[in-house]
Image 1 (cartoon, rainbow, N blue to C red):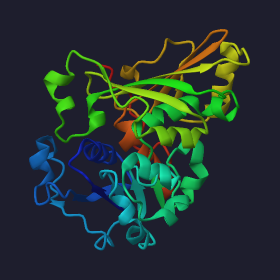
Image 2 (image 1 turned 135 degrees about the vertical axis):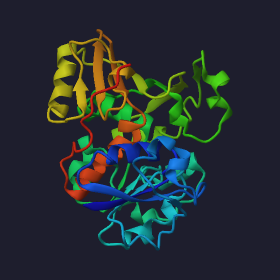
Image 3 (image 1 turned 90 degrees about the vertical axis):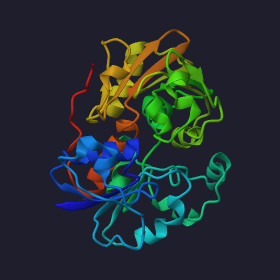
Length: 337
């Protein structure tokens, strides 16, 4: 049984990690870390855990991790790059970084979008981007992995086959809508009930921090406009690109099926309707469908931002790093209602 620690355990991503790992037959969560709530018991913050976990939240100290086999870093951006060398010094420790610090391999882009001077530039090439559907072998051979962002996951999985086949030569227009948990658990005015309820709002159009992730992974230019919607969880991305070769729908679907035919968490929805976030709630799935006209290809991609967009993909990556079956603890059906 491998021993896991969760850093940032009091946030939405951390608590989802704890829930998923509770289902994992090869993992026991033995330590929880939170600098903001250190000293409290996790069941004080989440009373529903009182019958299951009796763990006190600790201050995170990268020099005191010798009793762990796996560490999940659900930390704010701009923190893990300064500690990664110390973590990699533990030869048997597997590291899943859920922050943005190692996702973007172009250091100048990272510093431009995150306003942080990266302290471990030399490690950027060594830590693969955690897309099992794209980088499975690199992940298996790595000690640490950079878990992708939630918006980036929905977009990259939705466009990767078409980009690899050379069908994207012009800027892609992307409209994404996310639930409020995408902003995290910390107090923000835009996340207040009376601000978010009965409203939908665009924000950070063409300036969002996930743009360099998308462009680097896909090798294309995007115009990205995210929107906040009054729901707890889920992302639906709608992507519009020119149909320069006048492919029909079956041509496009054939490309997606070729790339994703053996991927357990990618669901090509044809002939079902366009995807809904209800279809992926509490799952590690990504549902994809397409609409094709003579001059336009529209790709729809739906994920749960807290699972495939964060904690579920982190466990999927951990399974690969540690030699477990990739789907372990991740086979749940969606909770539709």
